[in-house]
Length: 227
Image: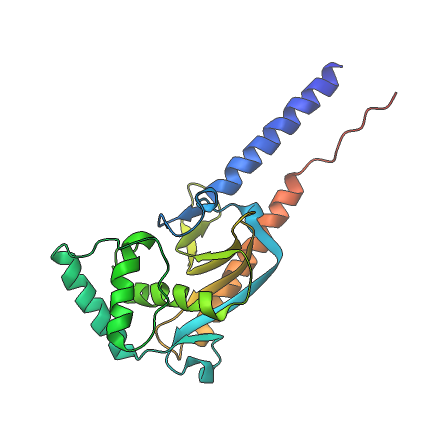
């Protein structure tokens, strides 16, 4: 009886440690108000076994092999970013509402979309790449044909709580109810950087496989009571 109790306590300890450890591997760098509250924290168990990978860029990026391309020129992204930074400095950047506005060209519409959604999605616009992440997220809602899903991003991942960050996921596509993540994406403003985008996705693919392998190693077999 004592041996069985020790095994039971050990099992609970392993499962508890495993759960906390899994949570510590991921950090949401933004508080995105446009996604379900119960899906705010990403966990290792959220990633589907048959995870899909995609790439996003601008202009004619699909000609270079990207999966999705938001219709905007590189120069226009820079203009939007500089204008948004100016508005932010003057305190004119405030959330408008929680309804998703699907952006259309020309550039002025894209700028207004960025200004309306950046506060809601918790972007501080510290880089031009965030312009693509905002516009790309809304663009993907129109491009993807899934049901009951949401898109967010800016999720850092690392091997453990105190280790260095390995990388960051620009886009995650997940189920609104279960929070299961069935696709992740990488954004690149330079539409000639497809190779680098794929390299970053492959890096996460390897990370995910390693972490799931470790989880399976630490899982104990179910105990059965023999009379």
